[in-house]
Image (cartoon, rainbow, N blue to C red; front, side, top):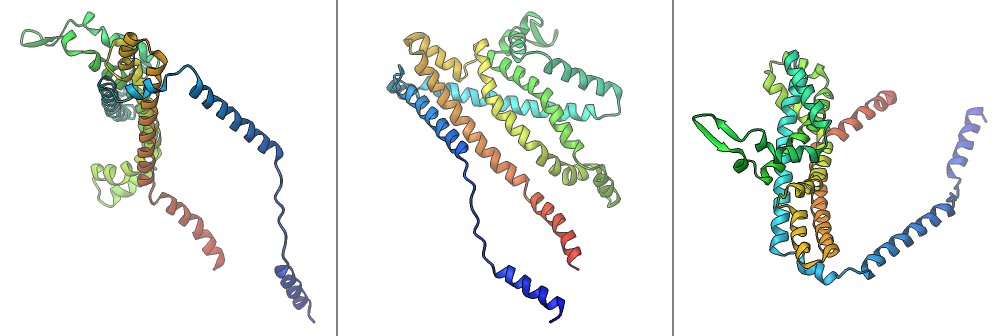
Length: 299
């Protein structure tokens, strides 16, 4: 028998041999899991059996004041995010501009609004009438600033402009993630700059920036609670109006907590489906790039 035949017989025997796989035990992991589970159960039981009147929580969960507060919270969050995205796109383009003035303005905008607290910006916008008593065209058409910049408007302006400073960097990072060679290739195919941006750059940019935008939207929903400092009628302000009267402080705070959790959960689900939509094809392309070398090796 040739050496090659002996080798084939030995390989066949090894192939037919069965091996018993023994799972490693992790007693420390199980002990840690049990301890964490016990702590969670004790925490939930403490809230369930503590000095919280849960029937009061259920009673005020869907009252008119609370429902109006959650609607205003959603409006403030949505309008602020839209404003932030618009400003983010504009200033991201300005920061990438070869014009030094545009670039300096964009960098100054980011420096100011990322470098000061959101609460300070809220208070400044709420009191902007002290700086500009009227707005409009002097002698032609003007309004009293205090009538135009209401607490609601001040909250949207402050949160949106602040968010725009962060969105600028997010959008800029997304634009930079697209290889310039793709734009050059599109130009050689006769695409206009607008077509190149819409068909080549934008889809890839969205795939990169959708996750941070989703996280920012969830953060904005919670940050909107700061608007209660300027008496904007959002969710937290609505709960405060009620517990200042009936004294059920912790119960009304639980109501606010439940609504915030519900809203952020819905936003997280929406973010998941949007990310999956814009991520379609990317994983497949990655897999194709990994398979091609293997097929080449097989040939």
